Length: 69
Image 1 (tube, rainbow, N blue to C red):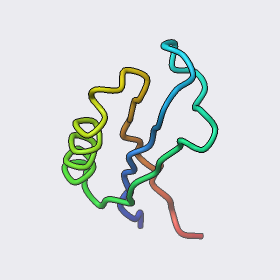
Image 2: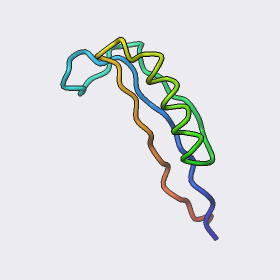
Image 3: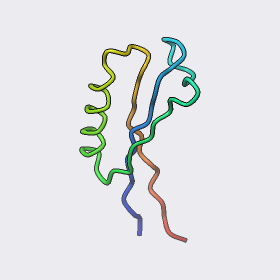
């Protein structure tokens, strides 16, 4: 039997516009969310709060489903 996945919203301020490395201390993790819809709602909110800051970016990630041992 598999358990459902969790979704997370992760991101922060990046040091350059190539979005490869976060500025130290700026990382943010929100969640876990049980549904992608909940994560998308959070992503929209945090993205809107930071839209004036071009070097801030957030993404939704999904945990892989786990099979209990």
